Amino acid sequence: MKTKEELPACPVVTTVSLIGSKWKLLIMRNLLARPWRFNELRKDLDGISQKVLTDSLRSMEADGLVVRTVYAEVPPRVEYALSPLGESMKPIIKSMETWGLAYKSGTLPGTAEEPA
Image 1 (cartoon, helix red, strand yellow):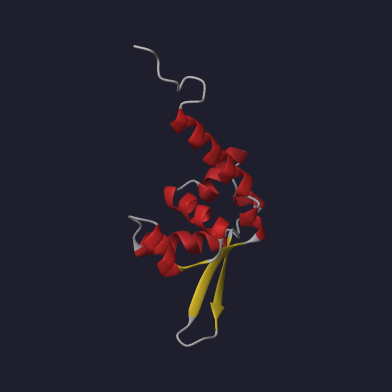
Image 2: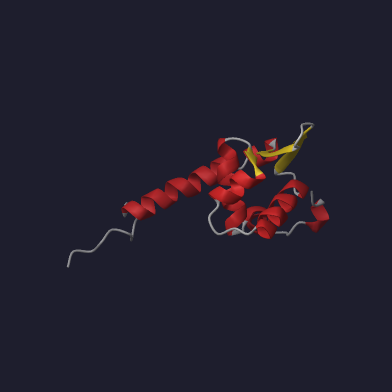
């Protein structure tokens, strides 16, 4: 997790630095539903490379958003889940979902199709 001195002064920039990539947002979207295994995430997130998924999960774990749990089984099982800090971002992701649905349906100001 970053120290206060390492964080940008602007709170919006702080949030974007933590979840601002396309893949981090989609990983969080999935983890809001339940814990996922690495290969499940890779298969579900069409187009993500193994390296990008690994780097994103490591970064999110270092920032305190994701918890990685290794189970002592043979073969080893690893699951990723949102931490309480990651869970606190649920309203942000939900708001993005709501806005996206409204945009797609044309119900936001300026999105309704004009009559020809």
